[in-house]
Length: 66
Image (cartoon, rainbow, N blue to C red; front, top):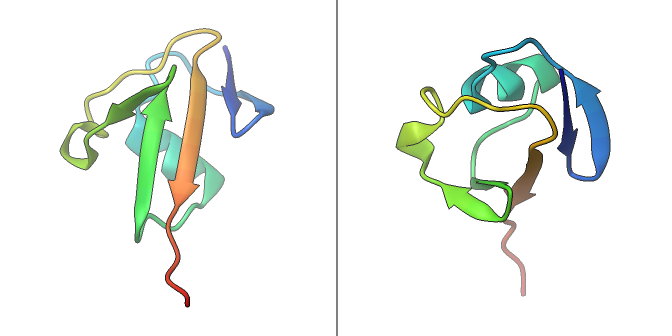
């Protein structure tokens, strides 16, 4: 199935969770938030939140600076 991750279409397995997507994309999770279809998903729910066809996933990294 396909989902859009940060604006790019990705092909993933059905029943893929956010955690599995992060592992598939080899993304570092430190200081990161994830939204699916404009709704923030709590980090503790990433392993149970199943993605669906045409979901829009935004992975947001926070960096400090000054």
